[in-house]
Length: 283
Ligand code: ADP
Ligand code: MG
Image (cartoon, rainbow, N blue to C red; front, side, top):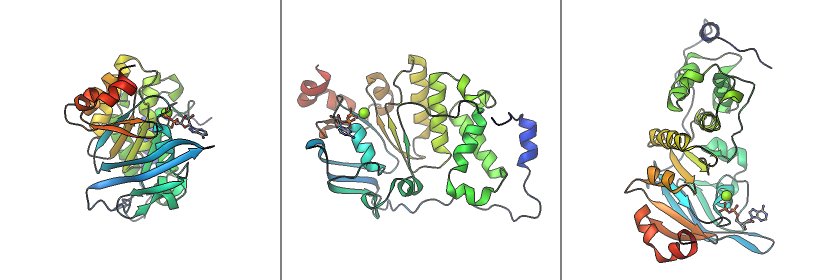
């Protein structure tokens, strides 16, 4: 186990290496071409498992900067869609593009992550014995773009970035607590913070509010709201209050069923959609 450092010890560690050139840009933004205002394209995507169509000609686009909520019954293909976007599952058919130019079906998982897609799975996976701060530090170090400039010590830019992320995820007061002591909701926010350290252009969150208390759920909604505009997001969720908080009156909500888009529109619009009521909400 690593030793727990105090803020003062960190400050010493953070002093810039003497004689080194200043760090102009630690992180170079990915080359995602969003000139058409669209960050993600899924077109006619199909995935079969032993003849069962988990995705059945799914088409969906996401605007750059958009926060899209995706709802739908169990087995609708929501997680499979994320598997396809992140390169974990290869589609049998269809096109998947990040921006205009990056064909995700031709990239492997690490390349897709490097291109700027971060994914949050249902269960939080944090380093329990390490303080919150170090979790963020470790997340940054696994990012090659930081790694090239980090060497053995943290730079000031990196520390500033950690501080900023701590504030964003509402864990500044918990910075030196072992992550294992955090509540479930705090762990979920920490894991989102770890993804943010890699400066994703697109964040995929699969049922992030599952198992949270009402207060934790609302804290998560507030966090995602703060991220609005800094990255595009797809949030798969069952909790309709959470979806309502994220989508507001005008946000687009996608309803998936049987491997494709059943309906899309504002939350009010899709709630009134007959097919949606029949296949999902009405049950
Ligand atoms: P959702 O996330 O909307 O609940 P999933 O994408 O997890 O739906 O699953 C869609 C369907 O595909 C389900 O019927 C599921 O059993 C099936 N499925 C998903 N992944 C696999 C897999 N790796 N092998 C076989 N079947 C799978
Ligand atoms: Mg799922």
